[in-house]
Length: 303
Image (cartoon, rainbow, N blue to C red; front, side):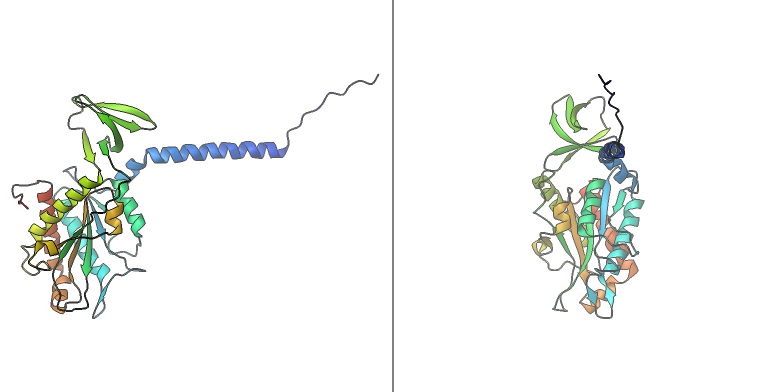
């Protein structure tokens, strides 16, 4: 009777390829999860840090390449005027201690879509968004600034959140002693008494953000109406502060407004808008309104 041969086992190259792909997939998943967990820290590192713990996102409308915005007679592009006011506003707010995040590098060739700008804003978790633009009209006699808020805020982020140790978490519950929040797939709790001053609660319900946006619009209007070289579009505040469904403000989970600083199609107003000192004056008026909105200083105006 012939001896039975022992069966030999050999590993085929395909086996090692499958193992290698499996290991790479695990590595990629771990990296993705780590990135998501640390996402707020990454965004925070791009914020110009101030001293008053309030973050303002500044959006300068359009860009120098594919979307230059409106163009005035004589070849003045809107994005240049937007950059001038946005730069002045950034400098003014930094001098007052605010944290600043910019959606597009000013006075550069950088391009950002509205979706990209919204992502930058949302990752930074600012307290207020200010978008800077300039207006045009077929009637060249029309002039004056307008301020826009959006009553169509996204409800994706509806709820309360907590800022704690440079990260932001969704609040699941709270009582007199603890705030419960979601972190890494599990619920954690924060002792309110022992952490007093170390955290910040944020209400991101759409109705709350709309109310806050209107309050910011009113405060900034009350400051800008005192400018000597430019006035509101009309004497009726309801026609100067306008509700308009704009993508950037709709997609961002913070209070936000757009300031249309004036009309480029009005020759006399354009001459004032291109003046650097006037750009700084507009920026200072917006900053004064932001101070009023956050109750900073002693001159909080009533709406």
